[in-house]
Length: 213
Image (cartoon, rainbow, N blue to C red; front, side, top):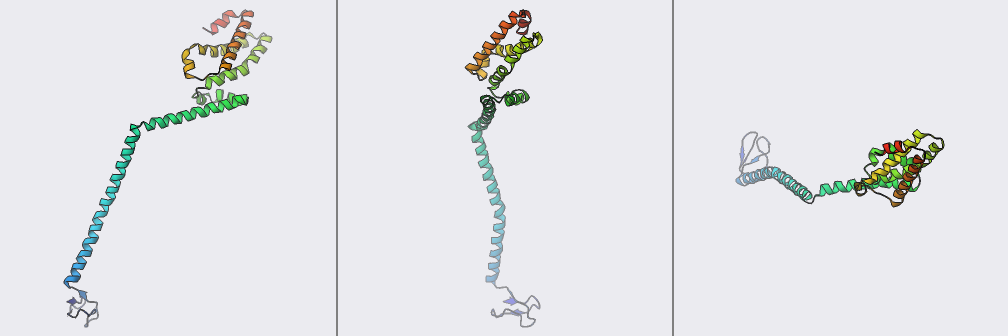
Protein backbone atom coordinates (compact mmCIF):
# COMPACT_ATOMS: atom_id res chain seq x y z
CA UNK A 1 0.00 0.00 0.00
CA UNK A 2 1.23 3.48 -0.85
CA UNK A 3 -0.22 6.53 0.94
CA UNK A 4 -0.22 10.09 -0.38
CA UNK A 5 1.31 12.48 2.18
CA UNK A 6 -0.70 15.30 0.62
CA UNK A 7 -4.31 14.18 0.52
CA UNK A 8 -4.02 10.88 2.39
CA UNK A 9 -5.44 8.79 -0.45
CA UNK A 10 -4.19 5.22 -0.79
CA UNK A 11 -3.04 3.45 -3.92
CA UNK A 12 -2.88 -0.32 -3.89
CA UNK A 13 -1.10 -0.48 -7.23
CA UNK A 14 2.65 -0.73 -6.45
CA UNK A 15 3.45 0.50 -9.92
CA UNK A 16 1.85 3.87 -9.19
CA UNK A 17 4.46 6.32 -7.87
CA UNK A 18 2.28 9.45 -7.72
CA UNK A 19 -1.15 10.17 -6.26
CA UNK A 20 -3.83 10.06 -8.98
CA UNK A 21 -5.79 12.74 -7.05
CA UNK A 22 -3.27 15.43 -6.11
CA UNK A 23 -0.08 14.37 -7.92
CA UNK A 24 2.16 14.12 -4.78
CA UNK A 25 4.74 11.36 -4.59
CA UNK A 26 3.32 8.40 -2.70
CA UNK A 27 4.91 7.00 0.48
CA UNK A 28 5.77 3.29 0.37
CA UNK A 29 4.48 1.77 3.61
CA UNK A 30 5.16 -1.82 2.64
CA UNK A 31 6.83 -4.04 5.29
CA UNK A 32 9.77 -4.71 3.00
CA UNK A 33 10.50 -1.02 2.55
CA UNK A 34 9.99 -0.33 6.26
CA UNK A 35 12.40 -3.08 7.26
CA UNK A 36 14.98 -1.80 4.78
CA UNK A 37 14.74 1.73 6.23
CA UNK A 38 15.08 0.36 9.76
CA UNK A 39 18.19 -1.58 8.76
CA UNK A 40 19.73 1.53 7.18
CA UNK A 41 19.05 3.59 10.30
CA UNK A 42 20.51 0.91 12.60
CA UNK A 43 23.62 0.55 10.44
CA UNK A 44 24.20 4.32 10.41
CA UNK A 45 23.65 4.47 14.17
CA UNK A 46 26.06 1.58 14.75
CA UNK A 47 28.79 3.25 12.66
CA UNK A 48 28.28 6.54 14.50
CA UNK A 49 28.49 4.85 17.90
CA UNK A 50 31.61 2.88 16.98
CA UNK A 51 33.58 5.91 15.70
CA UNK A 52 34.40 7.30 19.18
CA UNK A 53 35.39 3.81 20.30
CA UNK A 54 37.83 3.50 17.39
CA UNK A 55 39.32 6.91 18.12
CA UNK A 56 39.60 6.07 21.81
CA UNK A 57 41.28 2.77 21.01
CA UNK A 58 43.82 4.53 18.77
CA UNK A 59 44.58 7.07 21.52
CA UNK A 60 44.99 4.36 24.15
CA UNK A 61 47.28 2.29 21.95
CA UNK A 62 49.36 5.36 21.05
CA UNK A 63 49.78 6.38 24.69
CA UNK A 64 50.68 2.83 25.63
CA UNK A 65 53.37 2.69 22.94
CA UNK A 66 54.80 6.05 24.05
CA UNK A 67 54.83 4.91 27.67
CA UNK A 68 56.64 1.70 26.77
CA UNK A 69 59.21 3.61 24.70
CA UNK A 70 59.80 6.04 27.56
CA UNK A 71 60.14 3.21 30.07
CA UNK A 72 62.57 1.45 27.73
CA UNK A 73 64.62 4.60 27.30
CA UNK A 74 64.81 5.14 31.06
CA UNK A 75 65.70 1.50 31.59
CA UNK A 76 68.61 1.80 29.16
CA UNK A 77 69.66 5.14 30.67
CA UNK A 78 69.35 6.74 27.25
CA UNK A 79 68.61 10.31 28.46
CA UNK A 80 71.77 10.41 30.58
CA UNK A 81 73.82 8.89 27.79
CA UNK A 82 72.47 11.43 25.30
CA UNK A 83 73.23 14.26 27.73
CA UNK A 84 76.75 12.92 28.34
CA UNK A 85 77.32 12.61 24.60
CA UNK A 86 76.17 16.20 24.08
CA UNK A 87 78.50 17.43 26.83
CA UNK A 88 81.42 15.53 25.31
CA UNK A 89 80.74 17.03 21.87
CA UNK A 90 80.72 20.52 23.37
CA UNK A 91 84.01 19.92 25.24
CA UNK A 92 85.58 18.55 22.05
CA UNK A 93 84.45 21.65 20.16
CA UNK A 94 85.96 24.00 22.75
CA UNK A 95 89.22 22.05 22.81
CA UNK A 96 89.27 22.05 19.02
CA UNK A 97 88.90 25.84 18.90
CA UNK A 98 91.86 26.38 21.23
CA UNK A 99 93.98 23.75 19.52
CA UNK A 100 93.49 25.33 16.09
CA UNK A 101 94.37 28.78 17.40
CA UNK A 102 97.46 27.41 19.17
CA UNK A 103 98.71 25.43 16.18
CA UNK A 104 98.19 28.40 13.85
CA UNK A 105 99.81 30.70 16.45
CA UNK A 106 96.73 32.91 16.43
CA UNK A 107 97.54 34.31 19.86
CA UNK A 108 94.89 37.05 19.79
CA UNK A 109 92.17 34.50 19.10
CA UNK A 110 93.54 32.22 21.82
CA UNK A 111 93.50 35.15 24.23
CA UNK A 112 89.87 35.76 23.31
CA UNK A 113 88.98 32.18 24.25
CA UNK A 114 91.09 32.12 27.41
CA UNK A 115 90.32 35.59 28.78
CA UNK A 116 87.22 37.13 27.22
CA UNK A 117 85.30 33.84 26.98
CA UNK A 118 86.93 31.99 29.85
CA UNK A 119 83.58 31.12 31.48
CA UNK A 120 82.69 29.11 28.39
CA UNK A 121 86.07 27.58 27.61
CA UNK A 122 86.65 26.53 31.22
CA UNK A 123 84.34 23.62 30.41
CA UNK A 124 87.13 22.14 28.31
CA UNK A 125 89.62 19.91 30.13
CA UNK A 126 92.30 21.44 27.90
CA UNK A 127 91.68 24.99 29.10
CA UNK A 128 94.70 25.23 31.44
CA UNK A 129 96.95 23.54 28.90
CA UNK A 130 96.35 26.28 26.35
CA UNK A 131 96.27 29.01 28.99
CA UNK A 132 99.80 27.94 30.02
CA UNK A 133 100.84 27.97 26.37
CA UNK A 134 99.52 31.52 26.04
CA UNK A 135 101.28 32.55 29.28
CA UNK A 136 104.57 31.21 27.92
CA UNK A 137 104.11 33.16 24.70
CA UNK A 138 103.14 36.40 26.43
CA UNK A 139 104.91 36.88 29.76
CA UNK A 140 108.60 35.82 29.53
CA UNK A 141 109.46 38.70 27.19
CA UNK A 142 107.51 41.14 29.39
CA UNK A 143 109.35 39.84 32.43
CA UNK A 144 112.70 40.43 30.72
CA UNK A 145 111.68 43.97 29.75
CA UNK A 146 110.70 44.70 33.35
CA UNK A 147 114.00 43.23 34.54
CA UNK A 148 115.99 45.43 32.17
CA UNK A 149 114.01 48.45 33.34
CA UNK A 150 114.45 47.48 37.02
CA UNK A 151 110.66 47.49 37.33
CA UNK A 152 110.37 45.32 40.44
CA UNK A 153 106.61 45.68 40.69
CA UNK A 154 106.06 44.38 37.15
CA UNK A 155 108.53 41.56 37.70
CA UNK A 156 106.67 40.43 40.82
CA UNK A 157 103.34 40.70 39.02
CA UNK A 158 104.46 38.47 36.14
CA UNK A 159 106.29 36.06 38.41
CA UNK A 160 103.16 35.60 40.51
CA UNK A 161 101.14 34.66 37.42
CA UNK A 162 103.68 32.12 36.22
CA UNK A 163 104.39 30.67 39.66
CA UNK A 164 100.70 30.21 40.48
CA UNK A 165 100.19 28.44 37.18
CA UNK A 166 103.12 26.16 37.93
CA UNK A 167 102.05 25.50 41.53
CA UNK A 168 98.68 24.24 40.34
CA UNK A 169 100.52 21.16 39.12
CA UNK A 170 101.52 20.25 42.68
CA UNK A 171 98.09 18.72 43.17
CA UNK A 172 97.82 15.26 41.59
CA UNK A 173 94.12 15.88 41.00
CA UNK A 174 95.08 18.46 38.39
CA UNK A 175 96.55 15.83 36.06
CA UNK A 176 93.57 13.52 36.52
CA UNK A 177 91.11 16.23 35.50
CA UNK A 178 92.88 18.47 33.01
CA UNK A 179 94.71 17.78 29.81
CA UNK A 180 98.46 18.36 29.65
CA UNK A 181 101.30 18.39 27.18
CA UNK A 182 104.81 17.26 28.13
CA UNK A 183 106.52 19.94 26.06
CA UNK A 184 104.41 22.74 27.52
CA UNK A 185 104.80 21.39 31.07
CA UNK A 186 108.59 21.26 30.67
CA UNK A 187 108.68 24.79 29.24
CA UNK A 188 106.62 26.12 32.16
CA UNK A 189 108.88 24.51 34.75
CA UNK A 190 111.97 25.89 33.00
CA UNK A 191 110.55 29.41 32.80
CA UNK A 192 109.53 29.53 36.46
CA UNK A 193 112.99 28.28 37.43
CA UNK A 194 114.62 30.98 35.26
CA UNK A 195 112.52 33.76 36.73
CA UNK A 196 113.13 32.46 40.23
CA UNK A 197 116.90 32.69 39.73
CA UNK A 198 116.61 36.23 38.44
CA UNK A 199 114.40 37.25 41.36
CA UNK A 200 116.93 35.83 43.81
CA UNK A 201 119.77 37.65 42.07
CA UNK A 202 117.79 40.86 42.51
CA UNK A 203 117.39 40.19 46.23
CA UNK A 204 113.63 39.64 45.98
CA UNK A 205 113.54 36.32 47.84
CA UNK A 206 111.19 37.52 50.58
CA UNK A 207 108.70 39.11 48.19
CA UNK A 208 108.91 36.10 45.89
CA UNK A 209 108.19 33.52 48.60
CA UNK A 210 105.33 35.62 50.00
CA UNK A 211 103.64 35.29 46.64
CA UNK A 212 103.92 31.50 46.71
CA UNK A 213 102.78 30.84 50.27
